[in-house]
Image (tube, rainbow, N blue to C red; front, side):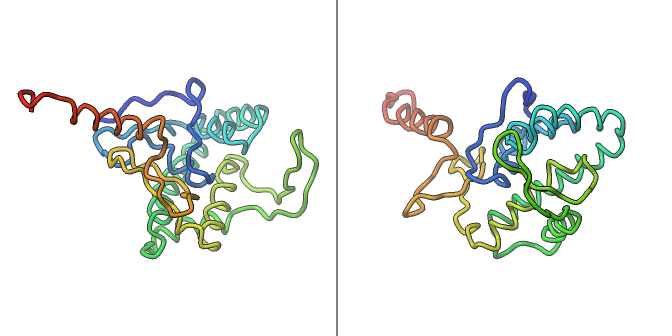
Length: 209
């Protein structure tokens, strides 16, 4: 039975991946424990909200895409299905790039082939933004994700992708520590739970064992 996941309107995503594509993989709660998995991309609106929190869209852009999805529900459902396929493929490719399957690469390459051409820069509300050739606006949240994933792979930085040591969590992150010693998605979450569990095991009485 899947865990009921909160809306991004109520609980923003935790940005612990160190990379946009890794944060996208982490839109699934408890990736390693199948019975407890929680889906946060439960509808196209959640994908748009996630993109807003990650800086892919501004508030006006989120509202615009949510309205577009309401007007084109079948197209929005198809984009969401594509997003979920992409997430599953990236979860495998980025954690084990040397053994990536042809099918997973095909999912990524199909989206890269459809991605708009970035032709220049224009001033934006905060800094600058790309000017891009026109594509289906509903796919806009996915373009920065696939560009980021491709950059990770071609740069070789995917070798530094790690996974939380809690096998139930299995969230992914870019390990930038000098000796690649990072173990937890977050010390405040899985790290502290592990410490508390170890403390309990050390201090419980023999009679309780």
